[in-house]
Image (cartoon, rainbow, N blue to C red; front, side, top):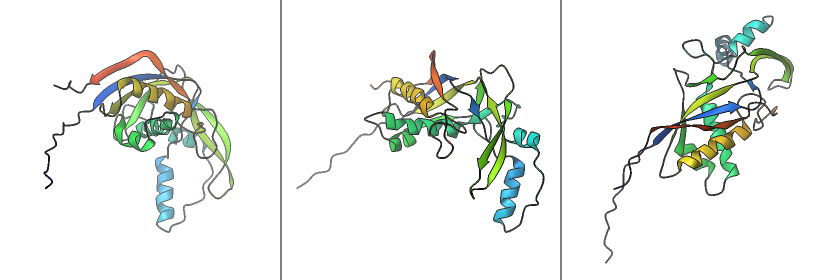
Length: 211
């Protein structure tokens, strides 16, 4: 007769670290401005957005990611996506496990990671692109030629070691973030690449040692 065995499980306590990164190639941002969201909302409700002349300056400003204090940022989700994609470079860890076991925290309601390390304001790019229907269009987007950030990463320490997380974040920089990054599904390029800064890691919260 089979007998049941009680299993004792220990509560999972995540570890939170800050990891400093520096950009290797320029970062191109492409936020959806409030005006663009309103046009999309109108189109989805069956309305027809009015045809207006392009305003490059307004499109450039609207494509920026701004923190509540007006500082520049980039979505934390973009950094997490880069970390998950980096899983393909390593044996012994799957992208699914990374999706569930590593998180990047941002600031404000939009969860943005604050950008640092730049000395000049972003420049305005004018790029010829093709929209979803294949029609050629001009886009105006901000580009940071020099940039960096300190990202707050939460991870499950029973799944990943600190050194592993640092390696994953560093590898995430190979695929990059933002527009025209190497891992972009369309219009990929060499932009948005980064690397971790040596000595730029600090533990904020650590799981207690097992007793």
